[in-house]
Length: 379
Image 1 (spheres, rainbow, N blue to C red):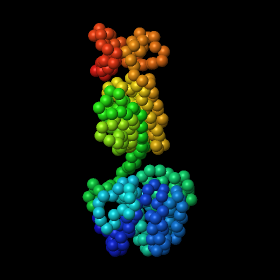
Image 2 (tube, rainbow, N blue to C red; image 1 turned 180 degrees about the vertical axis):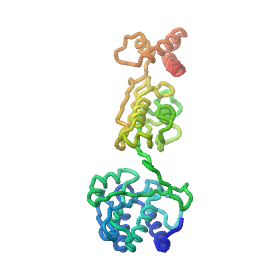
Image 3 (cartoon, rainbow, N blue to C red; image 1 turned 90 degrees about the horizontal axis):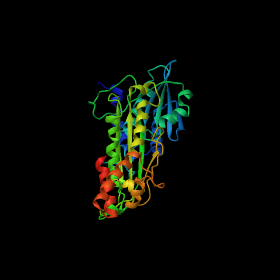
Image 4 (cartoon, one colour; image 1 turned 45 degrees about the vertical axis):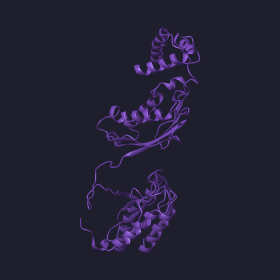
């Protein structure tokens, strides 16, 4: 598409702005240097008002047009991501572990370019409110700015924003009626097992195996529990566990995100799809997930916690402490144990497997292992 000649003349300046912003990435609400740079440029352009300190480092600037009319908001986000930039170039990130990997340096530059042009020409009626938002990547900066009253305070009638899309041909824009971007929640799952030497896995509760199975089962939510016409993504983005090659760790950490845009999201705040995701996630974490049945033999705890509003609620599931020795197992299966409780279907399988062990006259440890193995085979 053709570019207005005057804006085309801004190209070199905007390129310099973008590269400077790229070199000073900041996270969430802590966009102090970015905000200061934006304010300095806006003052150079001669905007009519600058209101700082909204949502900590956000700001709204006002440009008055010619004559009466509504106030139209133009919005850009300013924050970066907690990613280490590995590419070497002249404007590489100066802040280790932080990078403008989502293009918000470009968004801020685009709005600065629009601000400069509108402040020069003022060829419109009403006012323009330039909204520079922190914490888009996490923290809900836009919501915070709205709760602090910018829509009423500046009488903003409509707000427009744009997000870069590297897969779209240069010079093209995409628009849609209704929601365009997805709603997002993050989740964390912490697994407490029992560590030990890699040569003796039978003496451990391996959190690596638990984590792997959780990740696999989470992927069944989209394929088996959610309407196929809903737009839904569940992505596990982090798995952390272990420190050395010959030691089974004692805990593991899983982190991820789920994004959704079902049809009913347009009219229902907390959607049916989201409720199904949460319910299915909880049931997976509460189920018998360990492939070797160790969660039944020793105590392990699975924990999850809410990270963002609407995330999963805390859940804990504890299993009996110590091994289920054959004598205790037999007592349990005969219905005489008051200290250990298993679901009915597990008890039935243990009875069957324990009977086989008795028939073969196996020693206690072998009988216990065979019982657990048979349980897994039958699952």
